Image (cartoon, rainbow, N blue to C red):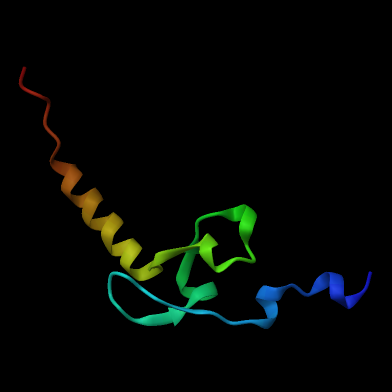
Length: 73
């Protein structure tokens, strides 16, 4: 097995992306979730919302669902 088989493009290039929610520029590999697991080498496989903003959005959405009531038919 040669070293060319072990190293991929994503190991050599570091991409930055701007979060569409908070507007901060962050590292693509570390700060964004992978949405398409089959395309790990492409930047389009990563989300446009950073991990911090995603956690905030999901936690707010789950907190609002705690006061669920039975529908009044």
